[in-house]
Amino acid sequence: MISREAEKKLKSLATQFKAVALTGPRQSGKTTLARHIFKHLPYVSLENPDNRQFAYEDPRGFLEMYARGAVLDEIQHAPLLFSYLQQILDESSQPGRFILTGSNNFMLQESISQSLAGRIAYQILLPFSYHEIRSLPGISLQEIMFRGSYPPVWDQPVDPGTWMTNYISTYIERDVRQIKNISNLITFERFLKLCAGRVGQILNRNNLAVETGIDNKTVDAWISILESSFIIYRLKPYFRNFNKRIIKSPKLYFYDTGLAASLLGIHESSQLNNHPLTGSLFENYITGEILKIQHHYSKPFDLYYWRDSTGHEIDILSEGSFGLLPIEIKAGKTITSDYFKNLTFFQQLSNTKQAAVIYTGNNMQQRSNGITVIPWDRIHTNLKQLKT
Image (spheres, rainbow, N blue to C red):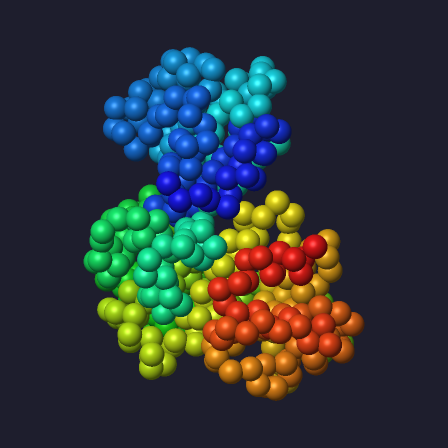
């Protein structure tokens, strides 16, 4: 088993809370990680029809079988359990008693907020980071952007394109129908492909609606569904304006570039040598890596982007106890003065001391103006150092 960065944080949460909800995309490794860490707890999958029927018909009797605790996998399939879990947790002081996993964030959060608020910790597990798989054979920037980061693509002998196609049909469409019954899946798939063509761009709902042939309300509903299933991610704008008019619409990203590449019709990594969206996919990939640091790192921080009405833009703006850290993402291998223009402008505007450029080259640099130049394959360690 490949060691996961989230393991330390998940263990820590289980010593502090009576229950922990482990959520994230399907096939991100939630079940494997939960069973690895909590071997002392019985494992029950609620995707098993027999278990699901038992939990639905007799939730009290079901939980009495696991009175000392359990790993309850894909618990969103048995929402009646949450009310009974509330009583069990209230009557117990045992930490880490129940580990709940789920791939549908909307349904899981809704059930937790109704019954288990204040009683449970929440941990998101995303697919592999580069730091986790860097020692595997076949690792290169192009290959990982093409294949994505889902564990089965790296630890099983599967064709990435075939796996992604089946992932879309098997998981996305099924999860979508659990939340909202979409009758025209052809239109929904076209919507997905249009979203893939807009990675790294400011979300234009009207444009998406026109090109898909749906209304704006449907665009909002479908984007919310894809977010709750950990398919797409909206990066919010930073609202402090620093005396400038700023853009207030979010930017659109996929949690996994392999999925975006598949939807774009990219069938092999060599196509990324001259594909018009290679730069956007690289920006998406780095944004996803920073998201993984955010979710798996013990010290919390928030992520935004910033853009003013005159075109100055910061790709990622990280904010936490360390202050503000502006980050520019560049797909080139050669460091040029253009890499620093927006960062120096923002530093002067906001009085920010530190900043970072992440690029596809190999040389690490520490500039006298506080800007650190970081190669794409070293962001895990170096970004965490900048945030201390």
